[in-house]
Image (cartoon, rainbow, N blue to C red; front, side, top):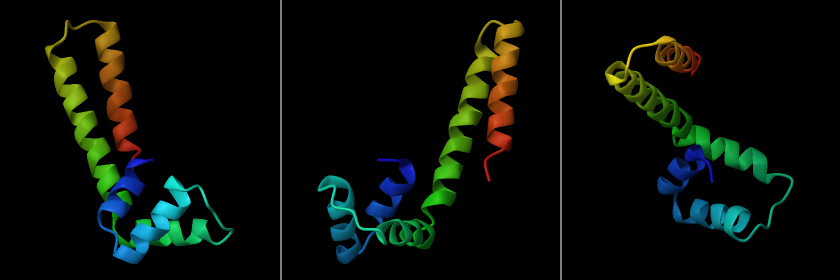
Length: 89
């Protein structure tokens, strides 16, 4: 399960929980299920919270890298982390 699905499931109504159980736990999927899953993820703001979580982890990683020995590798990792976080919508 991905983090957006975890958030959406956590905020789901009983009927939506049954949908997630059927499609993920039971593996019974129908052609229209992708659209419903997408709508549920949007409705529960799961993507926004996933992006916020990713930004928090990136900030923590950059902070931790600041305590590491400073060299080209730690600088490159910090730059890569900052770049990745900046690309999160």
